[in-house]
Image (cartoon, rainbow, N blue to C red; front, side, top):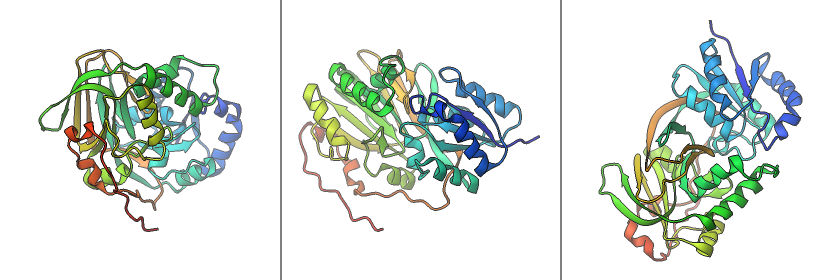
Amino acid sequence: MTKDPFIVANPNANTGRLGKKLDKVLKLTEEYLGKFDYALTEHYKHEKELAQKAIDEGYKTLIALGGDGTATNMGDIVVKNPDVTLGLISAGSMCDWHQTNSIPYDLEESLAVLAEGHSEKFAAIKCKGDEEAYAFDMTDGGFSGKASAAAQHEMKWLKIGAIKYNYLAVKYILKFKNTPCTITIDDKEPIKVEKLTSFFVSLADDIAGFRVLPGNAAFSTKNKDLGISIMHDKKGLGRISLLLKAIPGKHLGTKGIWFTRGRKVVIESHGDPLFCSTEGEIYNEKSAIIETERIDDAINLIVPKEREYRAEYDEAYYNEKFEDTFKKRKVDYRVEVKK
């Protein structure tokens, strides 16, 4: 028997703001979607248990009411059930995954997308570390992964998610110890990185307000690959400077940052293990080896019928050689975007 839809709501989303107005949000959701069943999360990663239970009971459409963490945890289950579709209601602090695929940040506008009900298959990034997880937007490690881990445990008194994450990012960009690593992309020759600061492997452009990989959503869609960003040999104020440049995407050509492309990335740490996360959800703290790989047509997602991934930059800056990134390069890859 098929029963639809089932909503998993995270009252702690948007640093607890969703919980305070949950009754109003659920009533509004019913106006758009009609009657539905739902459950509330009660602990960390509870979304996975609730999603699996709903699937076992026959639901074929699951809806995440929250932010990136809520959606990602449910996606980890949906991706293993090809006949199940996932919908996203924008109710978190950032909602990066939603916005990558043109799902509006506005609550009512995201509900209108769900009511329309158009779904398509999308790629995912299969990640292996201490445990296996999936990223549907971006996975990262190094100082950013450490900041994501800290966000689960530190500064619980701070209720503004973006401010909290950015503060912790600055904290750990200063404290993080560069790590010697070997990076292997697809079947290419391994590259030794003596002082890795952070890495990003992505289907998208932005994370938590930073334009980490400009134009990548368009390029990944076209090429069926992943955008890869490696930060190396950066410390102290040099890291802060790079972080500030990354907000508007002006870090291209900066000394110590490398952009490239591929489908599979294996990173082996020769120092401390790298903390790694998927949209803020930690999957590695202890393993010395991290594997990330693109999986095509991995998940059914409800999205707007009309959307586009706009590339404001030429793809050429993803073709640099690693050895060229030990110096500043002149980069002028902006292209005219047709409206």
